[in-house]
Amino acid sequence: MNKVYDWFEERLEVQAIADDISRYSLPWDQVGFWACKIVTGVPAAVPIVGPPLVLVLRGGESVGQSTLTRFYSAHTFVLPLAAAVLMLTHFLMIRKQGISGPL
Image (cartoon, rainbow, N blue to C red):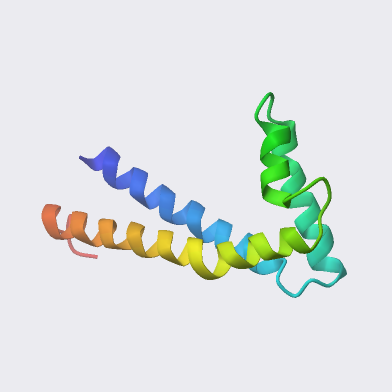
C-alpha cells in the first residue's frame, strides 16, 4: 500500500508544478508570453503524440489569446479541482492507514 501512497504524493507534486506553470503566464507580458511559448513547445519533442499535444495546449499553431484562455481555465478551475480530489484521497488514505510514526 506504500507504493500507492507514494504515487499520490507524486501526483500532488506534479499538480503543484502545473499550477505554478499556468500562473506564470497569466500576467501576459513578454516574460509570460515567452515562458508560455517555451513550456508549450516542450512536448513537441515527444514522438508521435508531441505535435498534437502542442496544438491542444496552445489552442492553435502559435501562442495567442486561446492559449491564455486555456491556461486561465486550467489555473482557475481544472487544477484546483484536481488538487482537491488528490488531497481528499491523500487524507482518506492517511485516515485509513494511520500516520506512520511521530514527526
